[in-house]
Length: 343
Ligand code: CP3
Image (cartoon, rainbow, N blue to C red; front, side, top):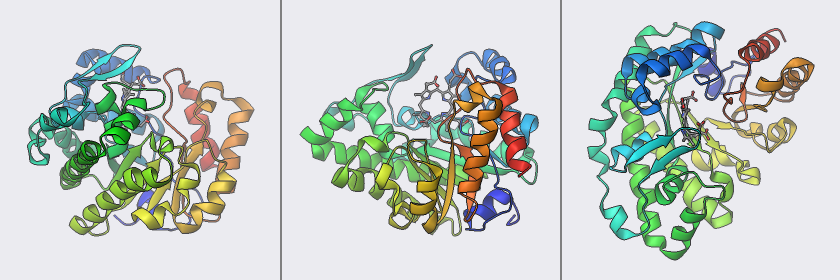
């Protein structure tokens, strides 16, 4: 097991060629994904269908031979398991029932009641752990509490996470209780994924960048630290990847403050900056801009080399700075991988 390249990088080893995977690698840019999704019906039916969710997880592994597969699911399945209504509006994104005060919080289930809804996800992990090639690492994941809370409070994605900030600032006790519930439930959710066969877990804090100073410490750092500590207590040696997207200076010290083995880097900082300030304390993942998967060409090759060179002196997992978009060209993904592996 220890010889899988992703696990070696996560243990702090500098490899001559960085291992590579891609956020949203199973997705709408792939014709085979669109075909399987059409078979499932809608997106959520795909997430809760273990055979088909495993199939779309495997598609980019078959096509490209990525070093890791990420479980196909969504960060919003956990709120649904806690009792929130959830649906997706085509072309617009997720919708959920909202939580605007203490009564909304009281209406939710407890961390022990989530598994009935989430069992199909654990089933997907089990299938994958049997079907993935031996050299491929299986990554499980959850949304970080702050990011999940921004959707639960607003009932949808928001440009500035305004409703969550409002609840946090006007009724801190309710907001803090929601974060605590999500932290506890995330630990139970990730634990079941690991028991089913996930070898690494990743926490997606997509909106960490909108938290500043004391709020960043309280609602981004503290929950990530608590989840990491408890997961490592339950599963000694389990590697954890944290993604406090657009945290800027908040990235500095994130390994030490949370205990995460790897910090994923978005595109708002240069790889040189991240090498100097973040990679000094552990493995980093990232951070080619997703737009190169749309535009391709010489710029893609040069930027890919730039990222690899900048992170060359320490442990690095090559990835994009955020998810690949539906308008990406599958040929560009092949070119990126070929460029990384020929360096
Ligand atoms: O990376 C992977 O391939 C694993 C699967 C995965 C999905 N979503 C599948 C998905 C993961 C890790 C996520 C995480 C996720 N989901 C995040 C955090 C990471 C990030 O991108 O910032 C967030 C904020 C969500 C919530 C979410 N899910 C939104 C806002 C949307 C709609 C936007 C969009 O791209 O359409 C989704 C839908 C979603 N999740 C899709 C996929 C493949 C597209 C659904 C489809 O097929 O129509």
